[in-house]
Image (cartoon, rainbow, N blue to C red; front, top):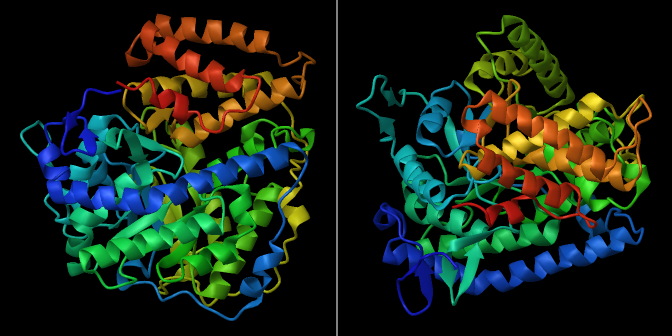
Length: 531
């Protein structure tokens, strides 16, 4: 239990110097009301996830739902996007850290997704100061002054969207009746409470990205939460708008249904590629047919990935919703011009394919990649804000297409194993030290990459896979390679060379990669180790 201060007879809140700006009595009351009304349903949906996992472990597989066939065949549309979200051709993402937010808002991207989820290590300080930064960003007062370099907003900035944490995560620093509140309700609630009306007055929101949904019933819960927030705050119904990340295999079978359940608030769907790959490995962890090769070999042109994104574009455009493409995590490196040149070429190819497939926009992780991505979408869109009028009747995707995890010529290599261990350990060390967006090997990594890394290691061990040279992938091999990796990081020194930090990172990684049963999310045990 954290050191808490009781704010009334029901809540206990960890103190913070900026609490008076964020956790006002009125805001606390609003959060408690959301908790009382919706936490029971949230817990039921999490229990349903676990029940479905048990059925998958026994061999059941998802399919398009018979009970919602009328929704899929029905003639309905989502509402038109607000003017501020009509053009989303390039979106940049990043954590709610002050300097990174200013740079992202100034980047030239059309949209900035301020991330309280996978790119943010949820220390209490990060969570509280992130909400302060959101307040300042909405009011355009966010700045950094007094140092060698000052940071202020340009006159023309990206439209702000906020990604709260997923339904599965708790916020242990805010207790109601002794229980942690939902991190989703906490992040969403504070942003809409403090910034909803101000955003609307500026014609810019409140806009959200919703992560980790497993199906339409979870979307229905979000829709009801948004209605409750609008009613409580005196906002017109439908004022809050949301984009849903399709980053789980089960959600891929329910895209029409998710749009339908959120039809009062939805603007589009996003292809969350890294978490999607992780979801496939997690949901079907017992099935050898779903063992993935080196993650570098699982690209957006791999058949099961292409099927998912083609279906997403077709579904969105049939309903008048935006289809937003996946992340390019490359970081320009002025000290390595050859690396940067290769990265730019890959981003160009990726974004050219997405724009050509009909996506209305795409994601990048660094301001230095905005212009490259923008050029490819400009070439297809011209002066049009999107491609909503482009239908894809030729696309036919079956359940088998989504579930046939086939990477032609895929292999498991020692280099792939080393990458998973190296990225997993270094990212966890960064996350545990309070930084959730970490530059590793010229890529901007977040929690999704660590999840893929540990999931593949788990798969390879439990399904008795061998490296290309015939070496079996075993727990002993993994521990031996971790020994050498961590010794090298300690010898190199620097912030990632702290022995205690690396020991904690290794403990979490081994817990989720070497366990007998597959852990649902590595951020759950890791969260217990945050200060």
